[in-house]
Amino acid sequence: MLTIISAPSGGGKSTLLRALLAAEPSLYYSISATTRARRAPETHGKDYFFYSEEEFKKLRDNNGFYEWAVVHGNLYGTLRSEVDAKLAAGRDVIMDIDVKGSMSMKKEIPDCTTIFILPPSMVTLEKRLRDRGTDDEATIQRRLTNAREEVHAAFQYDYILVNQELDKTVQNMRNIIAAQRFRASRTVIRDSMGSVLAPAVQSV
Ligand code: ADP
Ligand code: 5GP
Image 1 (cartoon, protein in one colour):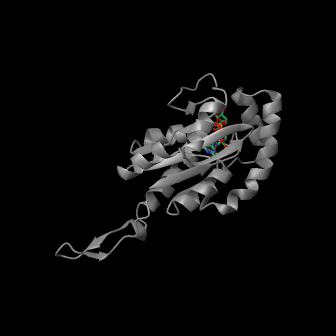
Image 2 (tube, helix red, strand yellow):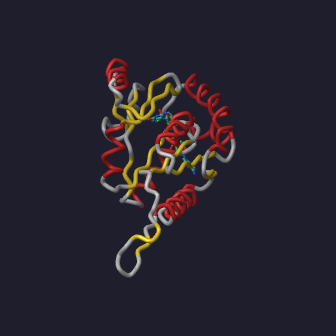
Image 3 (spheres, rainbow, N blue to C red):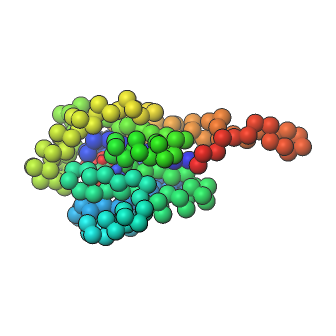
């Protein structure tokens, strides 16, 4: 099962995912590749695979990505190697990618579940970006401008969550993921002889 999370920058994706992954150890976080500079607390191979533009383009040209996009002036991409092996092994995979990337993934893996995280307001978003203290003023302004555009895409997603209280949002994410596990398309019903009565449509 594949779950995709998107939100404007500062919307709370990283914070929410950290809490979600701690609460749901069965989930596997798909680590993206990026050419953006590493932020102080980030680790290569844990938060992202940090590549030079040359390395990224080489991977892209070798069909290494499910999708890739330019986000806030840097290249980001979903590595096939990250997703395929985990899904094939029966793991539930979660990823944090932008709107364009999510829509591309939905085409590639239609059975995925998409969740858009909204900040309670633009004022709160700006405050959270400033309080985070990781970006300079120009970056904050660029991210706020992008956020005004990105929120329009929320209705293309399967679910929308407003990230007011962290704990409640994490619980709501868990509820959505739990519900997906019971989708009819994932359920195999057998008769008393063990034969499949209603074959599940397994697209992943
Ligand atoms: P993103 O990964 O989407 O860019 P972050 O997870 O870095 O966003 O969150 C941006 C800032 O907002 C962080 O400093 C984080 O601690 C804070 N934050 C996230 N969610 C909440 C929340 N529900 N309430 C208060 N602060 C939050
Ligand atoms: P950040 O630099 O703040 O970690 O992420 C910036 C944006 O890039 C976020 O909107 C995030 O969802 C997006 N992003 C991260 N990884 C990928 C990816 O693999 N593909 C795409 N399309 N977007 C990504």
